[in-house]
Image (tube, rainbow, N blue to C red; front, top):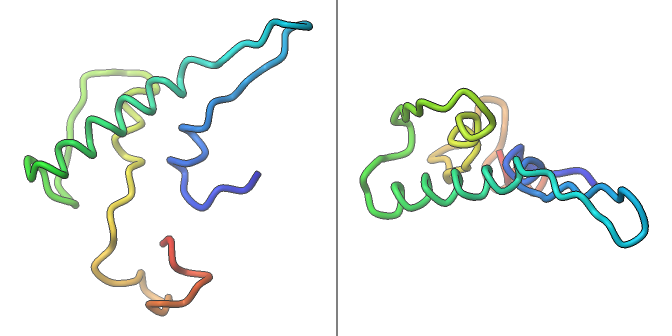
Amino acid sequence: MIHTHIADALKSPHLIRLSDGMVLARFESMKIYSALAAVRRLLDRGTVRPGQTLVDSSSGIYAQAPACPRAPPTSPPPGRRAGSPANSTW
């Protein structure tokens, strides 16, 4: 599967079949979901604004997750046209 944003790829649970009837779910996907929810809550409440810096004391995957939430850009990146279907998820 090809994802349009890194957050989509990271939050998708990775399941690994160990044997018949036994499937392993990788834990980092749970950490991604909780970090994304925390950042979205901060954005929704207006506690932080897009572009502000967030600092987290974690040294693992949870610390990487806050960099992943996508916020709607105010303008397209250089070289991209607004409204272009191929560029709709900058």
